Image (tube, rainbow, N blue to C red):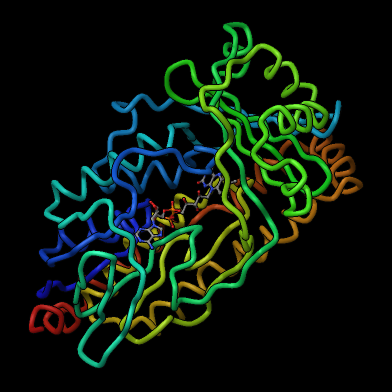
Length: 386
Ligand SMILES: Cc1cc2nc3c(=O)[nH]c(=O)nc-3n(C[C@H](O)[C@H](O)[C@H](O)COP(=O)(O)OP(=O)(O)OC[C@H]3O[C@@H](n4cnc5c(N)ncnc54)[C@H](O)[C@@H]3O)c2cc1C
């Protein structure tokens, strides 16, 4: 199948944002997504202010989809806790609904969306890129790899030792009321769990453990339930009074938290979202980075900015955020640091708000690029000439 300006592999936030933005600029895009329909993803479902802003920018109305407002953050370690009001607007919505809204928006923007096909091979040539699935070969001038937590064959990324799990629960009325508007982060040795209400009466519980612990716990919900209850009194109370809405937790392994790609995979391929960089999950900004990098890659392609330049610029702008998130992740998973850290946060709640703001995606990058776009008629002319 020929004639595309771009192929994007993966229909999560990054791939959809890229495809929507490029289609809105009049280019011909194909998006290849392996899932056949709505599905759950390992994610805490927390939408930061930047994610909300970027979704609005893509014309996605999260309130209409049932998103709930999140106003407070509570961090706990055993029985110690610190709580603060978030310094920005935030929300919660299941990825099952969010990702489908993005895919629907892609279709209505004119993107050629292919569902149920898995990209197995990507090959860059001098004139473009070939992507092979089990059923067809697609060709375009450029491609983006937006396969998120999953490695695309041929596009290397280090393998980490973290395993992420997620389950949806229906808590009792009292528990649901107590949790509404709050995101709870419970830290323990080697990991942490995040809990919050999403749309309807559902609570989303997402946690990370080291691969050694994951081998022990496997996909056995009873074992996980015991493990998670032992780590936090608040989670234990909720789990006693909750009904699991999934037969067992879903998981994803080998997560390289803190990894940030320095170079483009090839001079025809951009890497976006988690394939560009994987911020530790407690930062709650992975979705914003995915949406933002997708939009910026679309603009880069449109303006004739090569993948090497795009990656150079993205590395420079995301690096401070990643440099801060890495030690913060260490503190979040180290028992001694957790107790001392929560003590500090209790004394200085402003510190929690400063940290929460400092690990955010810089949406001003979009305006800078928009400014460049207006001044850069040469770039637009070059792209329309192709
Ligand atoms: C435990 C955990 C909790 C998190 N919690 C939060 C949170 O609360 N808030 C937040 O903002 N971020 C959170 N994140 C981060 C967030 O989930 C990611 O940063 C975000 O999903 C990245 O989006 P993406 O589009 O790059 O990838 P993904 O969301 O992973 O999407 C990739 C898509 O590509 C498809 N795909 C994969 N391989 C192929 C293939 N070969 N062919 C075709 N399709 C393919 C997949 O089916 C999927 O739809 C969390 C991460 C983890 C691990």
